[in-house]
Image 1 (cartoon, rainbow, N blue to C red):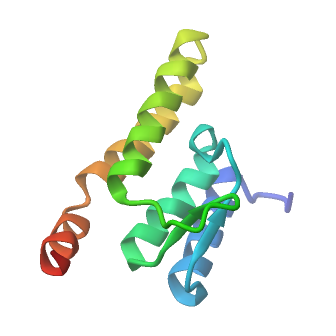
Image 2: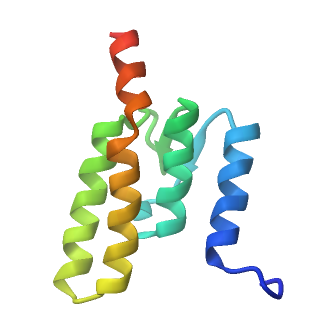
Image 3: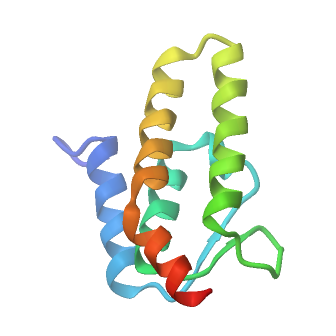
Length: 109
Protein backbone atom coordinates (compact mmCIF):
# COMPACT_ATOMS: atom_id res chain seq x y z
CA UNK A 1 0.00 0.00 0.00
CA UNK A 2 1.08 3.57 -0.63
CA UNK A 3 1.07 5.89 2.36
CA UNK A 4 -2.27 7.67 2.63
CA UNK A 5 -3.83 5.44 -0.04
CA UNK A 6 -6.66 3.36 1.40
CA UNK A 7 -8.83 0.51 0.08
CA UNK A 8 -11.43 2.89 -1.34
CA UNK A 9 -8.68 4.68 -3.30
CA UNK A 10 -7.59 1.39 -4.89
CA UNK A 11 -11.19 0.51 -5.72
CA UNK A 12 -11.71 3.88 -7.40
CA UNK A 13 -8.37 3.64 -9.22
CA UNK A 14 -9.25 0.25 -10.75
CA UNK A 15 -12.84 1.37 -11.44
CA UNK A 16 -11.43 4.22 -13.53
CA UNK A 17 -9.15 1.78 -15.38
CA UNK A 18 -12.20 -0.34 -16.26
CA UNK A 19 -14.22 2.71 -17.35
CA UNK A 20 -11.42 4.10 -19.51
CA UNK A 21 -9.71 1.02 -20.95
CA UNK A 22 -11.55 -2.27 -20.51
CA UNK A 23 -13.52 -4.07 -23.19
CA UNK A 24 -14.54 -6.91 -20.83
CA UNK A 25 -14.11 -7.91 -17.19
CA UNK A 26 -13.08 -11.41 -16.11
CA UNK A 27 -13.66 -12.17 -12.47
CA UNK A 28 -12.81 -15.16 -10.27
CA UNK A 29 -15.32 -17.40 -8.55
CA UNK A 30 -16.40 -15.87 -5.27
CA UNK A 31 -16.25 -12.31 -6.61
CA UNK A 32 -19.58 -11.46 -4.94
CA UNK A 33 -17.91 -11.67 -1.51
CA UNK A 34 -15.35 -9.01 -2.44
CA UNK A 35 -16.18 -5.31 -2.17
CA UNK A 36 -13.39 -4.54 -4.64
CA UNK A 37 -14.61 -7.04 -7.22
CA UNK A 38 -18.22 -5.88 -6.92
CA UNK A 39 -17.02 -2.30 -7.41
CA UNK A 40 -15.28 -3.32 -10.66
CA UNK A 41 -18.35 -5.22 -11.82
CA UNK A 42 -20.43 -2.11 -11.20
CA UNK A 43 -18.03 -0.18 -13.45
CA UNK A 44 -18.32 -2.86 -16.14
CA UNK A 45 -22.11 -2.64 -16.01
CA UNK A 46 -21.89 1.14 -16.17
CA UNK A 47 -19.69 0.91 -19.26
CA UNK A 48 -21.97 -1.80 -20.66
CA UNK A 49 -19.14 -4.26 -21.28
CA UNK A 50 -19.37 -8.03 -20.78
CA UNK A 51 -18.54 -9.61 -17.42
CA UNK A 52 -17.32 -13.20 -17.38
CA UNK A 53 -17.01 -15.35 -14.29
CA UNK A 54 -13.94 -17.62 -14.26
CA UNK A 55 -14.01 -19.82 -17.37
CA UNK A 56 -17.68 -19.24 -18.23
CA UNK A 57 -18.16 -18.12 -21.84
CA UNK A 58 -21.55 -16.52 -21.15
CA UNK A 59 -21.54 -12.92 -19.98
CA UNK A 60 -23.37 -12.25 -16.72
CA UNK A 61 -26.45 -10.04 -16.80
CA UNK A 62 -27.29 -7.40 -14.20
CA UNK A 63 -29.89 -9.81 -12.77
CA UNK A 64 -27.27 -12.54 -12.38
CA UNK A 65 -24.89 -10.09 -10.70
CA UNK A 66 -27.59 -8.99 -8.25
CA UNK A 67 -28.66 -12.56 -7.49
CA UNK A 68 -25.08 -13.64 -6.70
CA UNK A 69 -24.46 -10.54 -4.61
CA UNK A 70 -27.68 -11.08 -2.64
CA UNK A 71 -26.61 -14.65 -1.87
CA UNK A 72 -23.17 -13.45 -0.73
CA UNK A 73 -24.65 -10.74 1.50
CA UNK A 74 -26.99 -13.25 3.14
CA UNK A 75 -24.05 -15.60 3.79
CA UNK A 76 -21.86 -12.84 5.23
CA UNK A 77 -24.70 -11.64 7.49
CA UNK A 78 -25.22 -15.21 8.72
CA UNK A 79 -21.71 -15.12 10.20
CA UNK A 80 -22.20 -11.68 11.78
CA UNK A 81 -19.66 -9.94 9.58
CA UNK A 82 -21.75 -6.79 9.73
CA UNK A 83 -19.18 -4.27 8.49
CA UNK A 84 -18.42 -6.37 5.43
CA UNK A 85 -22.11 -7.02 4.80
CA UNK A 86 -22.77 -3.28 4.98
CA UNK A 87 -20.13 -2.54 2.33
CA UNK A 88 -21.44 -5.30 0.06
CA UNK A 89 -24.98 -4.00 0.53
CA UNK A 90 -23.87 -0.51 -0.54
CA UNK A 91 -22.37 -1.93 -3.75
CA UNK A 92 -25.52 -4.02 -4.29
CA UNK A 93 -27.78 -0.97 -3.94
CA UNK A 94 -25.58 1.11 -6.26
CA UNK A 95 -25.82 -1.57 -8.95
CA UNK A 96 -29.52 -2.21 -8.38
CA UNK A 97 -30.47 1.47 -8.47
CA UNK A 98 -28.35 2.58 -11.41
CA UNK A 99 -31.18 3.48 -13.77
CA UNK A 100 -29.17 3.69 -16.97
CA UNK A 101 -28.54 -0.09 -16.98
CA UNK A 102 -32.26 -0.71 -17.03
CA UNK A 103 -32.62 1.82 -19.88
CA UNK A 104 -29.85 0.07 -21.85
CA UNK A 105 -31.58 -3.28 -21.36
CA UNK A 106 -34.88 -1.86 -22.64
CA UNK A 107 -33.14 -0.27 -25.64
CA UNK A 108 -31.52 -3.61 -26.56
CA UNK A 109 -34.70 -5.65 -26.10
